[in-house]
Image 1 (cartoon, rainbow over the protein chains, first blue to last red):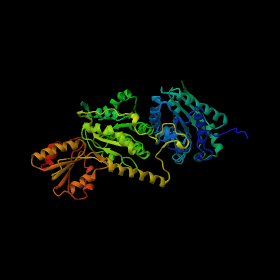
Image 2 (image 1 turned 90 degrees about the horizontal axis):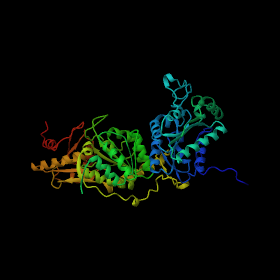
Image 3 (image 1 turned 135 degrees about the vertical axis):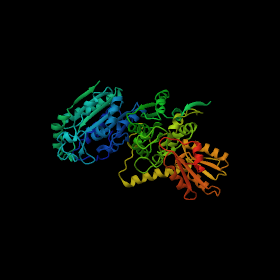
Image 4 (image 1 turned 30 degrees about the vertical axis):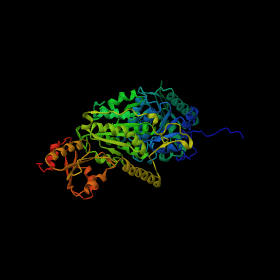
Length: 244
Length: 352
């Protein structure tokens, strides 16, 4: 029988630990497919975060360093400076990237470090059980804002892509989503473009991926995707914020 | 030919000659000459310098660069070293070789910028969270800084353990004539099959990690680290003894205070007092056998521990002496440094 589909070589055979309906799986596959397509096999170093993707080193088929919470951009800076000819990427969630690691993120972007960041924004701390994230939407419930996020008490969500796009160091910043096939396809194109910017040495590149967390949002996987489509995108509009 | 160099600059040049090719740091007094020097010097040798956004970022850049196989270093002073402790703990667990220089100032808190030794506990007992140690050196002269730095990367890579140089503001700022060694040939260094150089695929991929969810796995790692510390203790422990052969009073101090105490020994000898000096050069592992040897000598009456803090090394001294001989303590604080005469007065009981 003719083989018409095969899993990308840039993912290992390990079974993903993510919850049912979580979009980390799709994001992993898109990143891995792009890595294979750009010839990163045997030519690539990843940086895993702390958070739901803490075990990313079990899944991506390349050399990987596991970073402390939020420090992936600093670790990736060290790696890329030592191996400027290798593909280097950091895979981070919103608590990791936009809260505890915001300084590392902003400064790696401002320095124009030539690695690619995959930013999974699901508006919640997933691994620790659903606490409010810097990206939690106004009105969204979390275990540390049980009545819904109220800007008066809990502050406001941070639009990281828009903020980083104001800097001179980044060369490509885009926000994509994974709630239907069309957007998954577009997300892959953006990821590919980000890595292309790295290969061409243009600057810091990042793709923010709006993701779902059915477990901590208390929604079914399908309802969670609808919520991304109808709610997340109101605060976090999709688009390319910087491309040079 | 000897060159007149400031301590911090000598450390930076010795690091380069010892193979340092990556440095990340953040400004803090009194160590700024190290990043300043390396910012241009690393470029000359094809290395990378990053002025990081924080101490936290700097140590994590060292984690990345060291894990990727480079000889990586950072430097700071007390409050900055506190910030680095998160990264140091991760580096120790992930078994990444690197060199960390602490030009200690007084504290706690923001403290002052004058010499102190209040970071001894932090340096020698681990410093960050969890069950680990660093290999810690306490050099006393600029030449000793150079000699230790020059070989620090070799030792760090041999045991896959981070090395800390515990200096102080005095050592960083003082100018002395030093002999600089030749540049090390980096092409002749042992391979690093564990480093993430990007070529790993499938079973051959390298993972730099400090996460061990299974208790049994974490236990194995900690035991491996401690077996290595035992090996370091057997092979790398260093101490200087001075006029201890017939000594009745043993002064003991490390770093800058060690050399002041050496002058005190000479003054005491000129007054007919049989004094000697025991100066640990490795602070962890602690050269306790040197203390035990002297404690067993009948003519040794007492030890005098001298530090620029309220007494931290004295705990290791007492453990090493195991109650065999009494220990008196003399310290200055806050950035004040005792003179040799102050030590002599204390030993002779003339302190008012």
